[in-house]
Amino acid sequence: SNGREQPQFSNTTDVLKTQVMTNSSEPVFRITPLGPACLSHIHSQDKVDKKYSSKFHRSCKFLPPPTEIASRCPTDELEKHIMDSYSHEEDNLQRYVMFVASAHSGHSLVGSLLDSHPMMLVANEADIFSKYLGNSEMGPQPLHTRDEMFDEIFSNSVKCALFSRYQHDYNYTIPNGWGGHWIPGKLTVIGDKKGGSTRQKLKQLAKEESNEHMVSVFRDFQEIIGLPIRIINVFWDRDAVYRGSDRFIQTLKDGIPSVSSFDWDNGVYTCGDEASRRALLRNACDFLGVPCDSSVIDMWSSMASCKAATKHVSVSGQGSDSD
Figure 1 (cartoon, rainbow, N blue to C red):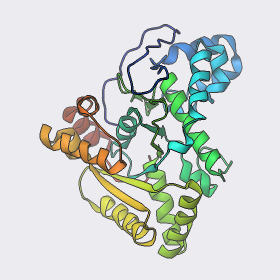
Figure 2 (figure 1 turned 135 degrees about the horizontal axis):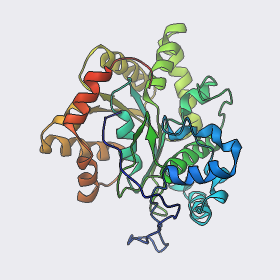
Figure 3 (figure 1 turned 180 degrees about the horizontal axis):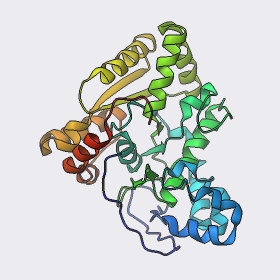
Figure 4 (figure 1 turned 120 degrees about the horizontal axis):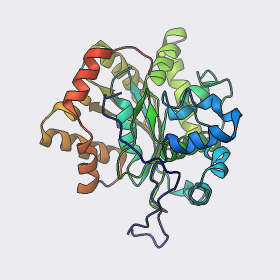
């Protein structure tokens, strides 16, 4: 979390769709988040779905799949359009992005920034790597195939876009961003924001067996993904937690040539000077292989808040493995 004030949404259940100009001949629909209003509408009609109300503000990942609720909110047309668009994107994917980070590193916001890019789809704690291993906190159902993993990422990103990207009681929806959708034919990067759990699982694999075992398991994961993996290491300063993460990542890079990493210094992003912040953002775009014009850099830069970030870190602390 970064401690930012939550954006306010109107109490309407209408989806606002705006066609935007792109290089694609297909229409592009922009999602305006419905927030809790649509969920309240569901809760009033269906007692079964009340089980989600206590968890929603903890994380949008606890929501049911968008197909489960779209028919009971005025989102059905938009949701079907997005799902149909996604089915044509698999051949365009070029890279898989994942995070290694500690709790309170600020990577919830970083994941939302990437998801707001028109060529990236980044889930909010879909916990793909742990589910591949079969020991996710989200449940015992393992993910064995690329299609299962990517469908999970898609479902997570779309529902967090439709009903607001909440995590730990903060709304990480990026205003005017592309969260949960993309320019048709241009979806290039797909991935998951679950840094603490990934770091913990890598640590366990190395500790319980060996570094070689950790590399072997990760290599099998990468082969199923079928894309080069880009790891983002998010940190506040280069403390012991950062050095531990860096060791795991370097071991993976030494053993798997298709794995590379990027250091995201949240101190630079939130409290650095404007030139340093924008350089960090441009370097992140280059690392992920996506173009970032001034509108993207401006949007991402505008979300940085040194005062809020410093206050949050001082209150919550940092350095544990959990998210």
